Length: 601
Image (cartoon, rainbow, N blue to C red; front, side, top):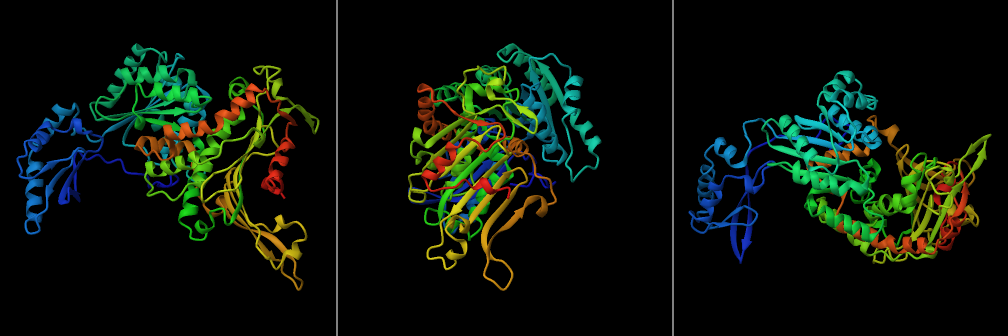
């Protein structure tokens, strides 16, 4: 994937027809394939004349493949000449751009295709703080297609000018690239429009469709809908968009924000309802953590560096820790958060997705389906989570430095007797040959002492270490550790043992540190920029497939139900502390120390 902090973004050129050839075998007979591709045009929009001629088998021995390719038998002597004859004959069947316009419903002479990104729920916080700024960043870096438009859609009454004023307050330019910033903002805002309507009204979406067509100007139309709305109205919005505002001659895609249900049953029901109106390849389930720079770099670090892949197994790794902490509470999201809790909000999606990427086998290729296949294998290999391997907590009021910090239940939108966890730690295991017996420890919480998200890989002790006596009885001090700090202040560092300069033999634990801010002058793109660009391009590897979602919920649903049915009381911890003591006991049970305890030292 091209770096978004570079102007060298992916190309959006449009070519009506492309031909390529390859060899294949049918029943032992060698055939030469002629592959037809059209940028944005499906087979049903290609001229019928081309396919009718192939079906009539005007060329002896030519076979029309199911994928639209044409195959012809290979004769050693006549191979090249025969191939050219068939190819030239097929090309001649496409008579004119007018025929294509009449057949497909659009004009190939209208330069390039157009993309319209419709933000459904445009007046919400997510749209204002993340989606519109990400779209502007892509525009600023010349990563969006030539003909693109941004539409906001919500129930709030608003004019185009009011939308632009609202959006302009959240737009910023790159720290390292501020030239023409104001000019670029003005150009971007001129491409932003607004339409108000109900999320469950096909009539309102039909009106939206008319406005979209006006901006498409007869070009090949591609439409991306971003559902920045509560999950209880997903289906209504998808139904209306699908029935009344889909593209007639290009692609239509829908980005769905988490939560994807709250257990296996509700998630399956949501998926089933979505698939009444959309195909699986139209649904882009977004988990913004998969768009983080260091998460995407995880597979690069492992698969392109010889020193890591041989160590990536139970033979050398003692435990893996996935840590997420925030130094603030729910702060206005208490009503939403109380319905889900920290396990559903963070662990079941963000941390589990990172775990699957970390632990997967080498995929066949970097193709989206190959990567997601390997992730699903990991999730299906995981041992069911036992209640005794889970610790939950909830933050309480605390006074520090003369400032009183509120308890979770002090939030007016949260019931006073709420048992919803704001902290959770869990031990997970993968029952396969690579990871058998290695504990994967997850920890996530709010109102803790620091804000961080990181992966910590603790390696085994060196057998028969000659320098054990220099470390005393605490062998953990001599443990090599690889730390991938996802946020903030992105970095990758490896802890190694080193001799302190001098005449004596004193050892020290030092870091081999790749600090991104020091190494790279470019500002790291926001995760939403990468994911939006991928959705526009149809790149799915950073989005969640339905069977991935099923496997993830199958892992967590039983323990979530047990926690709620038994009304397990969370362990209370002070706002701004390191969390419940029970998390340390859980780690100690597997002979592990949380690596973030001394991270600030």
